[in-house]
Amino acid sequence: MAFGITRAELIAWKQKVLNGEIAFLTHYWYDERFPEANTVTKVGCIHIHRLVEWGKQYHLKKEWIDMRSEYPHFDLIGEKQIAILKNENQWQQIERFRLSL
Figure: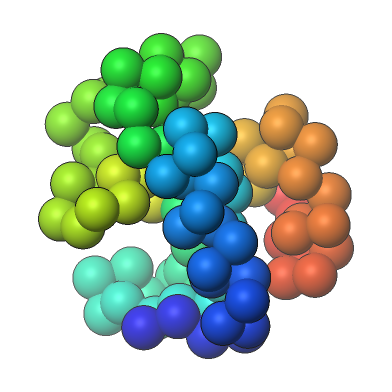
């Protein structure tokens, strides 16, 4: 379940994914499998090969891509999430969701 984003932000992320961009969307989130995490960043792209190549620089495996919807994406949480957001200059998302190492 996603919290803390607007419908317009979700639609914009989906459009970027479908346009073949590497798109970032961070939102509040709860999953009992990861009780220490309260946010997730979805990094998506419709072109799987492009998403795989992007993920290699962060040691993300192709098998970790969520393919259950028409918006293929990696789910980033925890320290890796924050490190990747910083490296990708996603400062607005870091500040908005008060993420820091």
